[in-house]
Length: 147
Image (cartoon, rainbow, N blue to C red; front, side, top):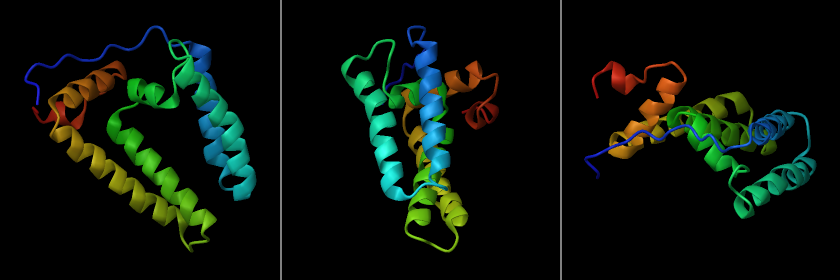
């Protein structure tokens, strides 16, 4: 583990319309899970997500893949909890589980625990997370408790 840490600055090179586009595509796909059969959702994901992710991976720069957008703008605990919850809820819906919202909450909690404990073992990640909370005008749990 590193003993010197430097917060990661907010990227200034990301195209703001690209970042907004990611938001629209991601939210649209997440919401559509509840209303669209899996095969049509998968096709929409291939077209919408696949196209943007492909551009992000092969062109990059101002047009990053979703992972980099999330990493730079969303605190890890929020991102992991949301990603796990969305995946758990979508799977529960598609597999016809009786309580998809409960499954989403449980799996989201596992995502939060994963991020929370992962950060506790990584000094660089701790500094990056504090910088993200600071950019949002918030104080992280760790900084409130002197860690």
